[in-house]
Image (tube, rainbow, N blue to C red):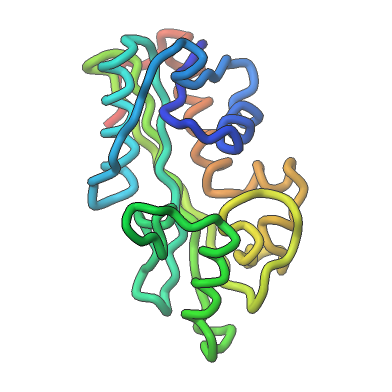
Length: 205
């Protein structure tokens, strides 16, 4: 199935394309569409669903959207749904390495056992106006004292996966896609798409 991804992020396109093998993932610009969306929801699920619906209303084809972020317990859940905008000023987003430095600075002096955190990913799939599906997955870990690894993007270099003692950026793409928040959410979307294509389900509660 061809799905239009509600994003302009080529890192995200590559990662989701690898997760949804057998399906064609395209971006709005691939169909000469101008798409912009301001995330105003109060949850990851609300942002993902609103974004998928907005793109569906624009293009009229099956759409996929995700909203992901990092939740740090010692920072009262920040950056959370504002992960991409963490530390921004006057609408200017910080580069990811500067966001990471800011987050580490805000955690200075916090011991390891209090640096617990999780990545959250909500994915929304809109097939038709009344055929909408949403899933959410997480991965637990904690925040490193400094960045490690060259892979991944965003907060990956400072997020240590609890089960591996390595940061997301140190994992191979295969291992990351298997255990990550986005990987687990995508696995559920793949199962939904299979059932949809087999005409075995018509809705998900």
